[in-house]
Length: 392
Ligand code: GLY
Image 1 (cartoon, rainbow, N blue to C red):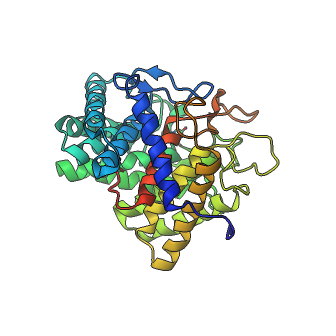
Image 2: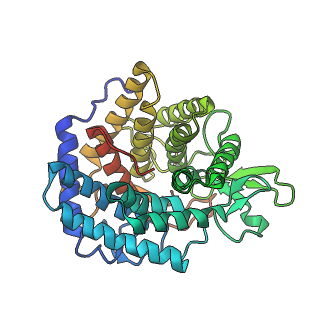
């Protein structure tokens, strides 16, 4: 597949990261005491308070930029570190006061912000905040069914479900287990992974976005979509969370079955890409369909493939490395922002929430930048540059 697509070059990786450094440094004054909104409006992010599930992605970009600067690639590492530390204070305040934390997205929030700060600088506040966030996350564990509930009240049968995205929330629990010595974090992560993999992966390795359980018996009930086009389709970002999520599941459990799942969900994703390897928002659509893309899914998938390359034999790793490099080339050439007059983000043509006749989504952040699209684009470039210790 895609044998003739070029791979991103070393120079393009450097150029992509240099542009990201320029954009992030330009954004710092407006986005140190505040955060990037989840998605841009007409390609420009507004500053917002730290209340959404996405705030950590902007802080994560600051930490990636700090690492790049510190490694000698850019001046101003200290200013980036100071900005990162101000943001970490905000995350500590948020979890101490429990501001908008009654959902499962603690990993998306606290891994690229506070775990990153702790790993890079030994930040005490980062560590404390991330451990509190992990404690918050395990309050959402439903022993009946053995999963972490995504949203809504824990006693509401209509919310008795997990979503595939949650696989990215689990590294926070493995990290908390290591730091505190408390096995319960790790046990819950392992249980949730098992339940999720048993239920969200379909026979053909396409994925359900969400999966319901019976709140009385805990028995699996049915799959459904929220952000995908229709129940039986494969939401592009859900599939990408499945790629990165199965690579991380293998990282933390070393269960061979997760390598097989990784290969299945990745191959399904690759087989349903348009010619330029950047998916439409749902894998149901392809070349010729007048539908928006979700460029963020390509970056997430690239990060997942690069993570899994660490555990595969040389030959297999080379193949996934090539796919990741090809996707990043396509993003760099045709989706990345090149001129700050066009956008204060990094990557265009991402889709957050697209309404269809068959889903329950409102329409926002469609064909825009979004903060995780920017974060994972920068993470993938950083990974390709080599020698990076993940925040996840
Ligand atoms: N985790 C929510 C999303 O991917 O839109």
